[in-house]
Length: 332
Image 1 (cartoon, helix red, strand yellow):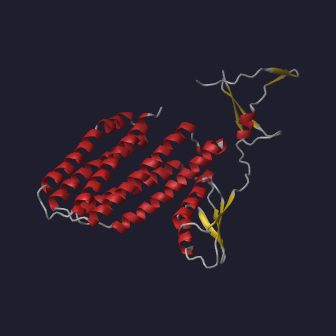
Image 2 (cartoon, one colour):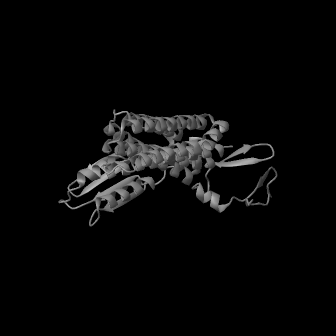
Image 3 (cartoon, rainbow, N blue to C red):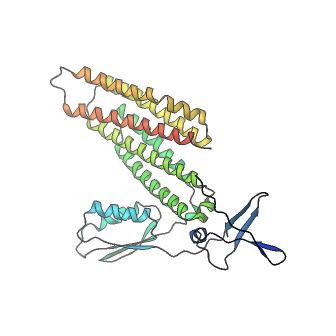
């Protein structure tokens, strides 16, 4: 149930009336006595909003000590600091620390972070991106473009034309965009002024977060499919059928992103209800492979496992496509 805060109207002088402002709203918008409030007369309703002029906020800073920490732990700590909107990240280490180049690579893979200072015991990275100039829609379109290219490259792997290095680099680009999009959305959720400057409502921020997550997961699945394909030695007939199933899923992906861009619920509904067919085609292909290999003592177990993992990632890709369709169906 929506709680409505009722305020009493008070007469003030001969020509004005006043009401008190909710303290939570004032604090949420970082307002203080003397700040300007925009008043928009909407007929039967009066819309009050904080002044559009962006206030200068204190820069957030964090210090991370590398002492007694594994590199993977440090990576998670640095990335989480970035996602939690810290503007300056200080990395401290001993002069004998060997993983400085890897730490620098982690920082460079976070969009907007630039290494401003480096000594024998310290690295200082600062965020140089203006959040108000970042478009979530543009980030999603760029991620979509990369996901399409990764699907095409993964399908080429079925045809013996695999370039895993290209897929790996594209996945790194996808991760950078995902982290940037997440940071922008979190800033907008915490600061209504940023959301307003981006022209995004709260429910849209939630929906766009879901889209970012789905796209990043789809990209991960394509990278894994390609990796398993280049490490397996599958029969030509099996590769051709796998190509067909993957191509069908790729077409469904293009259709669901089209429904997202034009808010076509009918198209999104079609993608969702036909997802069972795509999942079933994966199951049938896995079953066929299992039946063919029965009785073959010389079959390599590694190939069998690789093929099962490929099918698992194809089905997971189809599921993420279905989830994007569901997000579109929730649009008003």
